[in-house]
Length: 375
Ligand SMILES: Cc1ncc(COP(=O)(O)O)c(C=O)c1O
Image (cartoon, rainbow, N blue to C red; front, top):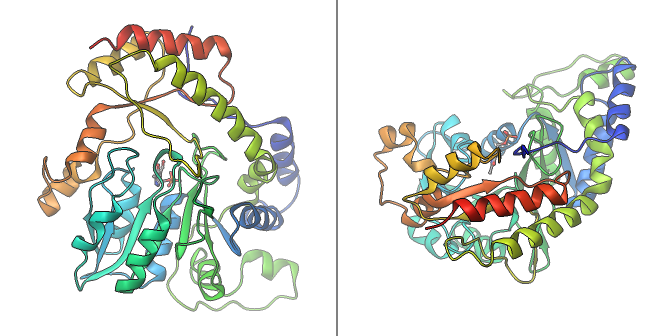
């Protein structure tokens, strides 16, 4: 039996919708993009959504929106994919890492204040694996020091904590529709916000800073465009948006299925003393993006390889960003700087976790992991 790390979940309705775009004349951003944005804003409980080409692009737009640049610092987490910190690097500012909470791997809100300096402009947090950060606490700190809050919600479209949804306490939230995400079109992303000016800026910034899109020019009486500021080129196309417009209607059903698989995994590993897992927060809705286990860090790589040899697809989410060569060499970050993140990075294994996993595949993963992780 071979258990793929991930299998996408595109339905015939999704594929038919993409075909409708291919049979139309407008492949770039247009009606499908707009429809998806409308649905995405409603789903996340935010006023506005802007479709972009990736979460990486979304994060960079967010940082640029707040005029962050050389000489500025942004507080963020080392326990993420490099895209989170790279958005800060991309504008010439400095990512200042703060260690994470042991139980769930999210940035430790109690450590944020001590990392704030007069150069700090923003906090970029990550709702790791699908559980939200303590947004009330982080918003209060941000307000006290006049900082912007950017939520990296690549793992957490569906999440809630203490009644708060993603994007509702941050200034802007960034999402990924990358190939393995809960909502996916291969490559894609979005931002949500509740501020009209930010929305207007983002809509232009994703298209070179132009005041009119190709669709505006084509479908309405031709008007010349002007370029108001230096933007990006990262709009979400109709083709990709078409793959998302039906998926989003079914997101809660998909989540229920993943929740059920998570419970089967939890039970399956509960008797193994060498496996632990991130805690599940109470009073919250886990978006269940990734299912990770923590094992003996001295043997993690051995287990990873053994799982691969047993045909179980695995990943590591994540080796901490501050220990990536670029960040070590540029800022002198080293082992021991953020021990909690380092510990997670050294002991984590991500297992196959998607709706199409059949019961016998889930059982195979559980048995194989339990046989291999033995010390
Ligand atoms: C936490 C986190 N942030 C950002 C990204 C970047 O997303 P994208 O691939 O859509 O640029 C990822 C990608 O997997 C991620 O896991």
